[in-house]
Length: 490
Image 1 (cartoon, helix red, strand yellow):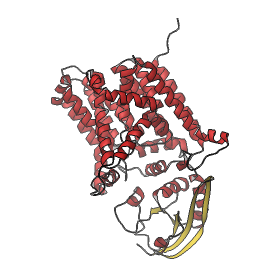
Image 2 (cartoon, one colour; image 1 turned 180 degrees about the vertical axis):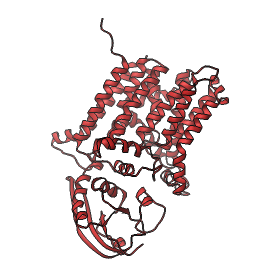
Image 3 (tube, one colour; image 1 turned 90 degrees about the vertical axis):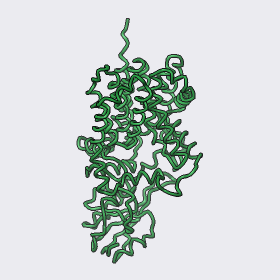
Image 4 (cartoon, helix red, strand yellow; image 1 turned 135 degrees about the horizontal axis):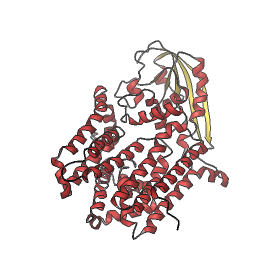
């Protein structure tokens, strides 16, 4: 009689194979860094306690991976490539603890196969550490709550404080874990005793202590991260909020697309049946860590705007919920959800191959990876102009151009253009300035030929050339490169 391979080892083997496959896909697709990846890499070259739009952990992770492997594509993306499989491992442990080893296996595999993870797994983002630390926090919270009534379990509660703090240093969305945890303590009679014990409050203090350097950095810089968050969510914009059912529909559709078509049906089914699921403690726990954040971001979408990934942590509890609630009596649905998601990922990864084999080819409308194409060649086209004018400061029209040029070319000096001196709109405007560079020369890279608003601040303007990089028959990257002499000041 053959012995069945332990489910954890099977999941680990699948995760390892998927990760190798995704590394191959990244190289096979011939893509460059996405703008945020190049932006985060730039942060990693100047480690600090905060950055314009995000807390600092993503920069620290990239700094670590590139210190080991250099600044290549895979090195920059490595944190995401590793953290998503680790999160799947945490879902396995959570599923095994709450239900069974079989449920843990399918929950972990379901998470790994989600379209959200398949897409973000190719690109480094703050969601990778956020989801990992969210799942770790749920694990340590359960361990802490399961301690005996004498109030032991300091180790789990201290670990909870650490992972909460690290999650907050990844993305502020981690703060949504706290009201769900409080709600759990209030609803579950057997857990209320912990509200009068020091362990949860010490965990909260630890989390706050870990976040404190980022808060201090924000205070020093006039709270740019909080201003940015308020801007993109339209908080505090008098005329920016209203009633937007269309945006709510888009957001809900994005959640369905993120978890997958069959898994989305199961999650919707679970939410419709919430009253029945609520009667069982383990289902109730997962509803508490899924529904509040979903409702919060749905309300944000209805009254302002919300990106599809703003509620990403719901998929930790959500995937565990649909697997635990439906695996035993609707196993085929759970298995089908995983298989369909894997098929979708494979089709997306090989869509360019299919387009080429069909003879149709890719276009601006049909290439899902077009935003990550053409940047290396564009930067290489700018490089000779920069080399011909040593001592010039590299300035570009926008954050996207500047991020890619800095990553590829590594100029000794660069700066953002900000003549108005308003609140910065990106990290370059926050950390660089030309205000004290009067008399200096600039290599200015522009998307448009009319730069009169910029050149008027210099004694002389010379068009050095144009760089054109064909990407598809209907899509190309094009910039003009100017040498601007004698900066006269803003």
